[in-house]
Amino acid sequence: MTDALLVVRAQLGERDALAALVRAWHDPVWSYVRRMLPAAAADDVAQEVWLAVLRGLPRLRDPERFTPWLFTVARRAVTNRLRVEYARPEVFVEVDLARPDGSAEVLDRAEVAAGLAALPAREREILILFYLHDLALETCAEICAVPVGTVKSRLNRARRLLREALLQKGSHT
Image 1 (cartoon, rainbow, N blue to C red):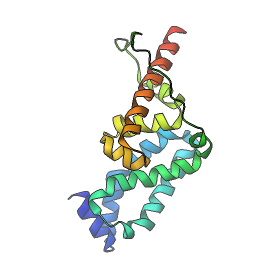
Image 2: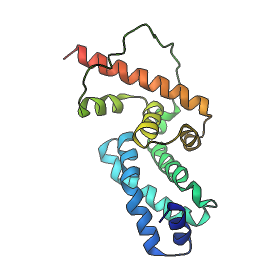
Image 3: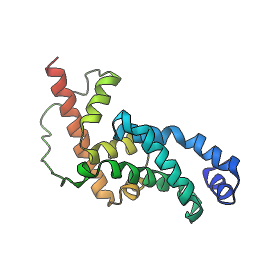
Image 4: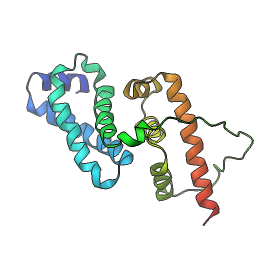
């Protein structure tokens, strides 16, 4: 059964449909929240997301847009916890394309997770949505309420920052 059909059924009051949506989307939502926040806050924020979904689902006009709507709700909950980080102005830096990217190095999961956690919130968020949740640029833009071009520039900056963090960590070990 498609998410859109489950949404319509949940909007009509079918608890099984709502439970199916939660089962299908709990892990991706929790994963997004956990990668954006410290572990201590992730469970609470994920619960806040599902409470907001429960309250807001009857007002969702286009059931086909459930995924971006869901991640927008999750983003809003995360943003509420990260207000200080999101309030910082974005700083754009020139990319040095002449430097080798070090992509041939083998990295373990813990190194990548630590590098991802060290990124500024906006860049971390874009990498998580685009690569880990496999969302289209347009969907990422909708979730983040920014133009697609901004998503592209944040992705570029995030990749560079992550690469630099991983290379720097590798040179010190």
